Length: 130
Image 1 (tube, rainbow, N blue to C red):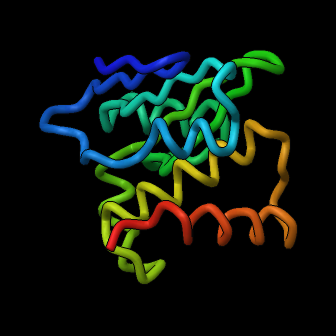
Image 2 (cartoon, rainbow, N blue to C red; image 1 turned 90 degrees about the vertical axis):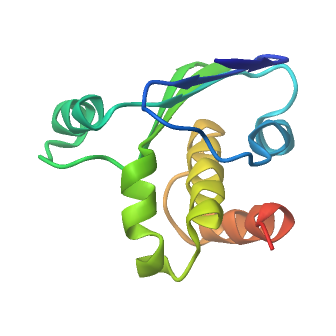
């Protein structure tokens, strides 16, 4: 488990987590004071979460849970992100960056639509990996 100011990363899977600018993205979108946990669940946990929250019987790519106005939790399934990256014409690391940005924007209050997509593009251009 890695910890930064008001930001915790929890890995429940085997293997490592790619070194990506998660803390910088969190700070840019949600600010320093927002308390955030980023959880990388097991495949089994991911399927269970997807069943409960989206009524789907497959691993979830990402879920964002606002706990209150100043804290939340993001779930990202690494294996699912790896599988779907090519579908979105991104490499694995950049797809993880995108999923994290997407979830942070949901925690900020954005809903799917043109405004959120503009914000996703803006932050993705800043944080994508070359």
